[in-house]
Image (cartoon, rainbow, N blue to C red):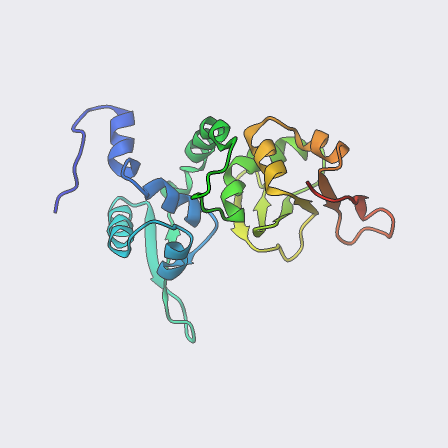
Length: 216
């Protein structure tokens, strides 16, 4: 079936032709964290039906946003990953996250949450905070899980789980992370207030733990 189009000679309309459907940008959010199997995507997109997810992935392949490849044995399963055009949507998602962050003031009882969903709005905040330091990879631990962000200027991104060799580890509550992501609280102030525990892996004893406190 041909995909619907706004049929407008406009850059915004053309962009929405490709990414304006429900779930598409959230799939991009997941794939910004690296290659994912279909089952992994479905698990981290609560509420999407299997038919809808399959349909969206086909549309995104057709539009050149994602590719599908088979892993080498013994895995031999298929994974989806973003193309360069798909990864180029990171600034758009960052802008949407900044715009939508104030709506996170109160978490609803029906709201699902994954730790790595905070990665996109945090990348720019962390890049600004660590701009004068030699920090490239930052681990972030929340009660819901752990993820890490890569602050590489040319190819910023994130991935689930701890990094193998992070430059800095941050531990905080989801409330604190939300405040930082929203811009209501700077990371510097959160550290000063004792709301973030900062660890520098590999530093000498007494220097590795910049701030040891209970994250709240």
